[in-house]
Length: 397
Ligand code: CTP
Image 1 (cartoon, rainbow, N blue to C red):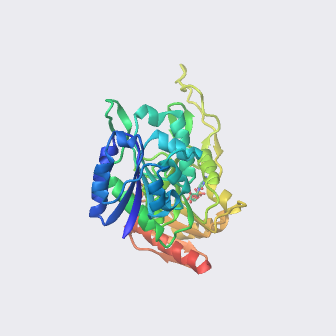
Image 2 (cartoon, rainbow, N blue to C red):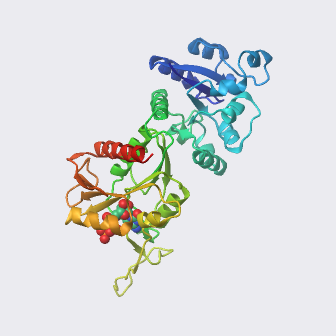
Image 3 (cartoon, rainbow, N blue to C red):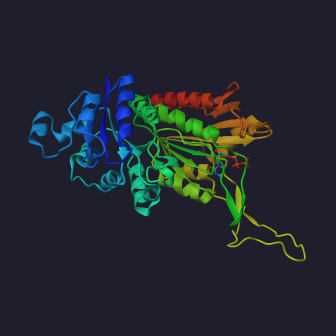
């Protein structure tokens, strides 16, 4: 039976953790709980142990606890450590290596993945220090679910509400499945979406990429157990569970985020990066002139992220690009593969409504030739690509 260690922090959302325990039991997942001192101000140890059917741990220095199960052993006794609610205090402690109580010591001592479900006031969530801690934790590989937007107990509105118990269960199941997945131990990097290149503070050059294909690939990689970073341009879709999301706007920001995410074993460059940007982004809005002279926007070339990675000292073992073409799809993709130095190119015909649509019909161009894949959903393309990635990386191992 799979099991989790649930660290319950001190927030009003702690009451939802009781429901979480019940839901986990319904899904066949056993819970052992650590209740912080602050957490015990919101729910009682008795209610937690009644639902988990186990002793509740709360004191680092309790001799009986240490005699029964040491804090190091406790931190490693489950398949996954879940922090819900993850308060600003617990996030700050873990991000900075503090270990003054049982909960924080457990988080530092564990050799298992950690999933956090943050819950706090919106101002706290958006404060510079919590942002900094979150970025650090994400860099360290901590997984997150939520927080969601909504009304808070304090009456304010915005991001900070803890994810609902069923959402947390889904994230836990995914994290547990990933542990046993075929890409466990593999680092993956995906780019997705368009880039926006500013003309002035209110205008940009962009394109119609929805980001869906790249998000579906990142999702499939994470499900297969890869530690996945998704560098995304501005899109309207929700990030997949268990993926480290880096949001960027311009091509140059995307390149910087991609380089910061190295090393990676496999990289899939699905973003529709703007080839050019205005050479100067005006600091104030460009106004119509009285004599109706139309502004001339001079373009300069953006860095090519795929080609840069191909030449990089930390080049991923398997580097995959896309080719969005309207004519001579396969021939152009074959040429693009050689020109950019990618291992594989996924070629798609974008003359129809592929951008923004649910389906995609692609060709996989590799060292061994061209495979024509049937018309599939973007999720199916993601799954099939990941199957090919698994075969390639396993074959090379
Ligand atoms: N790409 C990139 N950086 C760029 C432009 C493109 O990383 N500045 C990547 C895309 O993510 C994709 C591949 O290169 O994986 C091909 O993009 P595409 O726009 O089809 O090719 P271009 O290089 O722009 O060639 P052309 O527009 O001439 O077809």
